[in-house]
Image (cartoon, rainbow, N blue to C red; front, side, top):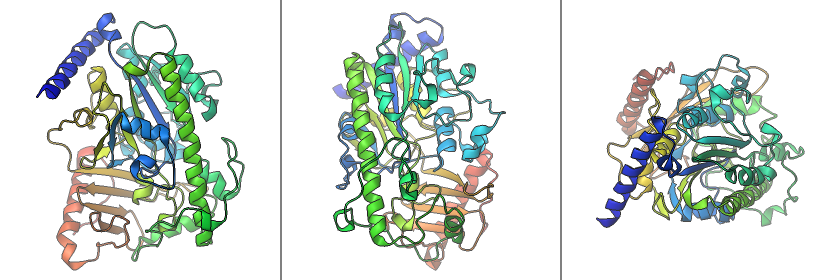
Length: 464
């Protein structure tokens, strides 16, 4: 009872201080609101952390965040591709709502949806950004995105300099709280590694012999009755997928390289956390760690992202800070969208009214060790394949329920997949054609169809 009382008192205090900030009073109460640091990696699977039980990679900095906070095991990106996913995280709206559904859309000149920094700077936060940008907004458009500070070099800030940027920004003299995004490129360099190209963030050692590399995943095999569009895309996108003729040994070396890149960025995240500590800001800073999307990591002979298997779509999501969460909590029950739930969670902690039109939920009650009333019973992920010289117009949707996962693509044979993730975590046996699963298949179709109606998504879900 005492613990619950303390949580409620802290929630009431932050709400009251947030109301003061929203009304334009940025005095002592606003200054007492938490700082916020969002740490984002690029192309990292949820399972690619030692705190998630992965013995092939060592991530002491990510583990440190998990030990001091709440880690959500059922967190999904809005779209397993950089620009659509990042746009969702910073707007709170799904790709079909923002119109940003491929990486090509980063060049659009018509995007006008306010970003996270706009909401928080209007509420009295000093907002900064360092690292990979990759958003459909020019950094000069401060009135739209709201981030008033970038390090020298702006979006060119490499991973190795992000900790320095955090130290500079967190150490600034200011009257109120700050919000900062630290956006790392790695482990995205695995894309160049697969092609034998120079790694943008610097080299890693050559892999050892295959026998000394991680084993192949249990779900290395391609499932029976897989949607044909997946391998069609793989064959058409040879630059993205130079893996078609790889031997199992080469895939093992790929996994070794992927984990080394994650360890590299983990060390840099450790530098960021140390910089925050040296700036004297660690105790009053809420840290959220996530990734824009995952990577196939050899599951189902897949590298890269965009396919709607677990590895590309399930991402790390850790809300960390001893003052703000129940340290060491691991949530395995709630379905979280790292895209649409990020802004509601941050607004909840900061005491900022949620912007109109957002459907996400705050994970704060769960992160504090409590319960969230009427939590969602499913989460949706979108994709539009974006390989080759021209957009292919191939779309897909994923609906994840507590037990089942339904996937459907817009064209091709075997458009649908249905997996029982309690019995088949590796997604090796689709039940979409199983006669005794027709009712479950139809229920998933109905749920996705209802989501499409509710959100204005034009995707066509198969009928009965």
